[in-house]
Length: 310
Image 1: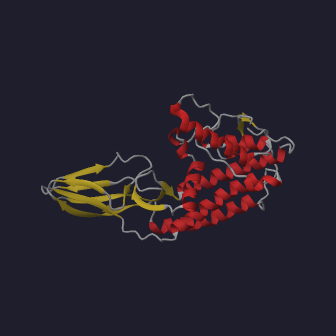
Image 2: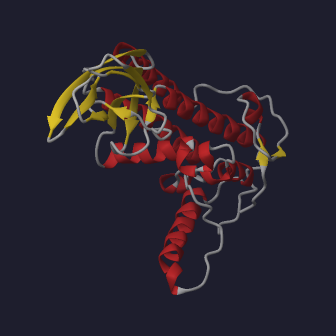
Image 3: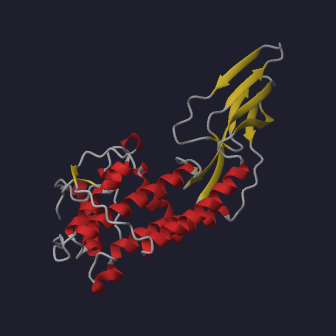
């Protein structure tokens, strides 16, 4: 497979900074009746419902937070409570949104393989560069086996694609994007789509977590003295969870708490949260960019110039 680095037209349109060689701009009108664009249209409809529900929950709004106090041995523990009722259908709608975006990528992949290979096609998403050589030695046996399967999957899913299309798919892999937050491919939009959609499709609904992004407490001591606490040590991408402990004292005090309420999806309560609806807007934009770029490549590709299988 060619490892040509490209800078597709959508990278300029969406302001993405990619250090790639330039692909000639093609101004062919986009056909919105293609199945992949219909999938994106349906995802946008789901997103509108999600946005409405998040707005009703007050996501993104600073507010006073209810504080509960309980006594343990010689300490008073203070916890934050948002008192929100989340519609149990919200994670279901979220799963349908993710499914439609993932399906859009698979549809355009299927449109680029020979007819007899459509059932075997899939849009590959890998966080690692699967073409990097694996060191010798028994310590790398597991990695070598995993890489072998990944390369086999890639070849099986993309066999027969025009080389120009395959170059775009390679370019859009999470490990290729230097602008990913914190330089971590796990934070790439396609990785998030892949992980969250797989879990929803095969195992369980995604968790919808309300939380406080920037909790700020004012503690009034029995003497009348007041002290302010802003919690800067909450890791990026995480929140003070609903019901979470945020203050402890050896004597009872009065605590007033405020903060910005966020609604987020998560695979586990302890893992990084993906804010709603912001993270979903990022997903739909990334998928739209990928589809537009591949469609440009389809319009200019030589159908007889398929990339060689690995």
